[in-house]
Image 1 (spheres, rainbow, N blue to C red):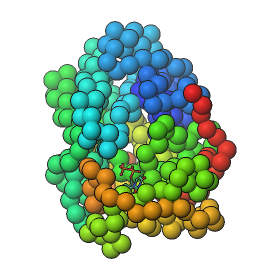
Image 2 (image 1 turned 120 degrees about the vertical axis):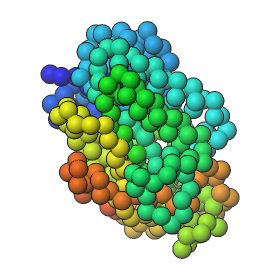
Image 3 (image 1 turned 90 degrees about the vertical axis):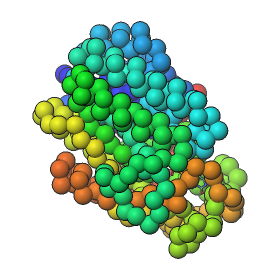
Length: 327
Ligand code: UDP
């Protein structure tokens, strides 16, 4: 069975990707330092504990598994943290990715699927973004991901590393079978925080800013079901294995929801009250991040049919009530 090296395979999106990679007939080999991931989430293939900053360890793993492709999820990904500790993001994300890209090239593993982000676009109010939108990140997280995109282009030109870059919008939901799900420690994401607040596991949710220039004053995001998102990765992998050229795809749905709308839907789906209060803006947040999906749909055949807000909240709620990891 051909192997795919999945960095960050113990994390939220990476663990869902491993399940889908396995279902697609490849063996997912997880490379993860467990800084934010969970060993219990590595269920679908071998686990190689390691850090992206450890080039020797990366070389060992490429040599022992000889993967046909890399899916690179491992990264620090919190906008707020990136504003306070930019050095962490430049070191872990950018320097770590450089190690990984060089190790892949040196091992002759020339198919590379990269998790990038809509945060590379920055704040472009009231625009539905596409792959040609200008990239002007307003936080260190987005800047670090944009730098890795540039690096992939340079290594592609110099050494023939072919890549598919996926710019994610907001990822939500969980595996409907609840084998894996979203669990960060500490948690910073809207939907899991809200589900915790509903269950009384933490205090009321704080809405970060109610004075944005949006219809209800709160930020708007484009939410994609994690299972739809990882399906796109299999299509991206196939794209590369078929020998097609490097390409960038946005993974959004074309519709955005405000924080207040997410709260309203959560109340309806869970049939429970959502305790919340209003607070100040969080530094680094964009007003609105929404993307069309024309390119992914027409060129990859992506069909994000699970990405309705209610379905995402329902699947996240099921996982929330049944499964958790424990350190
Ligand atoms: N948000 C919020 N309260 C929270 C966490 C998030 O109001 O406790 C808002 C945040 O400002 C953003 C949206 O919810 O507008 C999604 O934030 P999240 O951290 O989930 O993802 P991000 O957009 O930063 O990738």
